[in-house]
Length: 562
Image 1: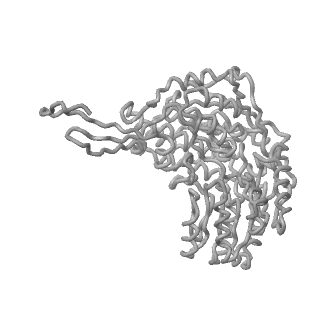
Image 2: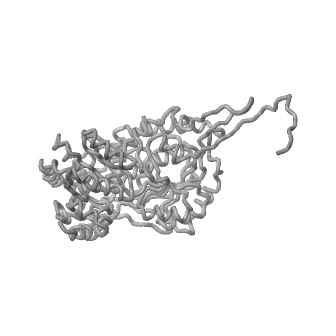
Image 3: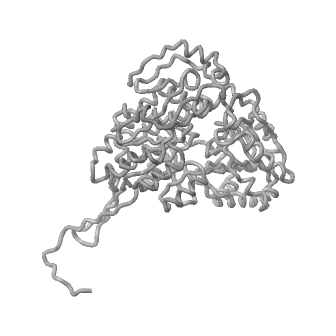
């Protein structure tokens, strides 16, 4: 069990209770403040943005950068209190400071740090590191430490933050022991003659890059980072600036669990600087999770050497068979508005069969959304849209003939969220399906808003082909849900759609990226998966065939040249 030190800071707890950051402390102080901080940690999450501002550091070539060596810093504001202290500063690394990162990538060969024929003991090493890290994240104090760091950076409910930690711990536990080397399992095929055999191997790329998003600051970067390491690559990790402290702390945990410090570089910078590293250093693969606009740009400048998990305008279709309406209303609310809608799997559009509308489903969804509150962070800041931008998009949709506001469409009351972020109520806009499908309206209706927002439409049995047309015309195909136990209905929808992670059946949802199944888009050869052995092998390794041909028979005679 990892050792820990008990934090006893009455002054900090007093500040938490009495700070002007009442929206933060009002909820956090309902949780225990007597938990332990791991000995390897370099911050106390209870103090972030209240009594202290953490300094995030870069790591390169096995060394942590010193605070005094940071030429310029980005200031990350407290997302719940514009009047409070910043939660952290992050190195604003410049292009001129990339030299050590380029040298680190240049030190790695194309054959990787390990592969099935080189340094094979590292497969076992990473199995043991995963075991220790998974065990650590399964300890209540360590889980709480990361949950609070997550909540400080991207405010979400305690249950959502702790769920992210649990998925990460379960993933690490899945790849303990021999399961890392099982990822590199090879196969053999008999050859054409005696002494010949072909062998297929999973081969690393060598120097690679990971560009991670803000919304799951632990789960997404950890799952991709560990996949890269398992397969023998040397990654440089570029986290989102707003949440960089989470992965900084996780690297401290990995070092504590035995990972060589030179195995991962941590680069904090803005997008153009990361692009310069990716295009200047010999980085052979970049895994990008984030906006489709940025991913398309990276694909262009790298000539396609990117694996992408980008935008998700995710649909849910409610079939004709109405049942368990309270459960369905609850799940619709969770899918659309948990984490303030800031999930790539969030329910973006809801196709409601008229039977559900008649049964009162939309009123129940509205009632559930109304229960969300800043008090428990079941609604909170929107980190990539301003309030003005959110309301402008809402009002634009309301100009469509027949459109109406079902609920929301307002700024949150009594908040101190900084103006650079959004502060909005959970919102739903109804648009008639025939109007939605019109050329002049469809792009606006199918625009992903990374916020607590969804489009709702209704349809009849005779309109199912219109629903499928809408799904076909959408540009990104990440998650989806077919909420029905009607076998014929469900089969028709599944047979004519493509989303990579699709839930089907009466309990179907759009959100949920646990460690036990593939999560990723379909229909795009550039798509990246996450979480499973198949995803790790597909993203972080390539196929190499080695043909052994060792024996020349004694009776061989030279044939005529051809």
